[in-house]
Image (cartoon, rainbow, N blue to C red; front, side, top):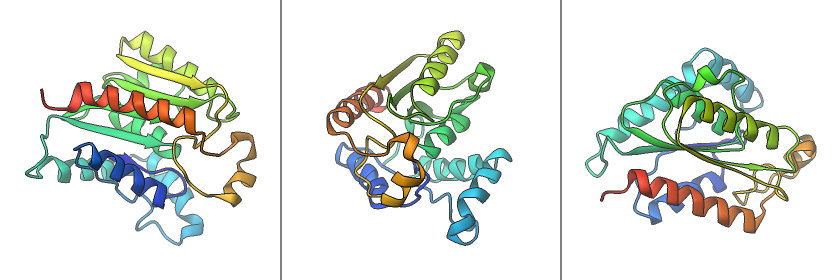
Length: 208
C-alpha cells in the first residue's frame, strides 16, 4: 500500500506504484484527499481526520480490498509512506495490522512517545539530513523508539539530501513554501534508499 505525500495523487506517487508492480507486487494507493472538500482545504481536513483516526480507516479499507484479491497473499502485505504519508504509515501500523509484515517510512513525522509504536511491524526508514523539519531529528527519534521497543528496523539519514529526495516530483511552489525542508530529488540517495526498501520488503513479503 502506497500512502501519498502532502501533494496528493501526483505522477511521482503513481510512479511508486508502478515501481512496485514491476517487481511483482500488487500496489494500491488510496486517495486520502478524496471526499474531504475543495483542494485548498483538503490537506487541513485530512490532518484533522487523521487525529480522529479516520485516515487509518481509509488505509484499512485499502488493505481489506487488497487482501481479498486473487493474486494477493493477505498475510504478506507492506505499506510505504512519504512525507505526510510516512507519518500516516507509522500511525497505521501501531498496534499491529492483519498481515502487514513491513513498513517503509520516508521523511515522515514520528510520534514523541515510543509507546505509540508498540506492536508495529519491522520498519525501514529514510530521511534527508538537509531537511530542517522532518530530517535527522525525526530519524533519530524513530531509531530510539524502535530500539526501546525491540522492533526490527533499518533507518538511515542521507546527509546531502533534503525532503522528498526519493521521488522525481516537480513542486516549485512547494519548494518556496517549504524552503527549510530543501525539497528535491537526489539521485544517489534515492537509488540507495530504494535499494534498502526493496531488500527489506523482499525479505519479508516475497514468497519463498
